[in-house]
Image (cartoon, rainbow, N blue to C red; front, side, top):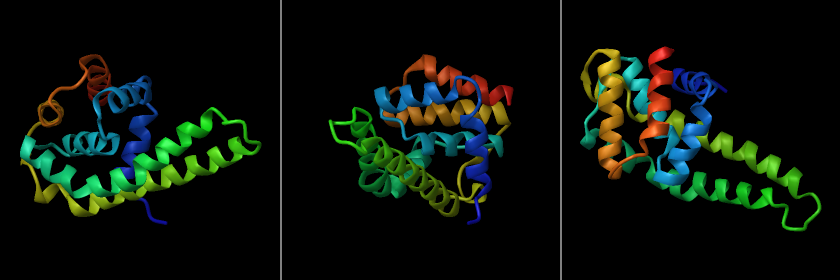
Length: 159
């Protein structure tokens, strides 16, 4: 299994202090697709600035996979966390978690293949691109929680 530069970037970025918690907050409280968020950060790392329309185009391309595969797997994993009074539920939860992570990886690989940085956006300095990409996503979603977004931006700028 070959992993894209985007997947490797995402694993390193997610492991930075505070990023995981900030992403969970953005996902659960603001409807953020963390894979899309990471793609925007990855583009910024490549000095590529995106518009709200670019974000909408990317989101539309991946929404069916996210809505029909990733979110249902996440819901099952979270439901199994409370065990539901069934023995073996934790083992099943671990397996669903592994499958959910693979679904996330496949989503990222699809995004990386569909949207090479050379085919979308405009060149911009790294920090400017990061700020523009996050602002475009916030505009697309109708706003984002500022505190976790600041954590993500700070982690990116310090990396």
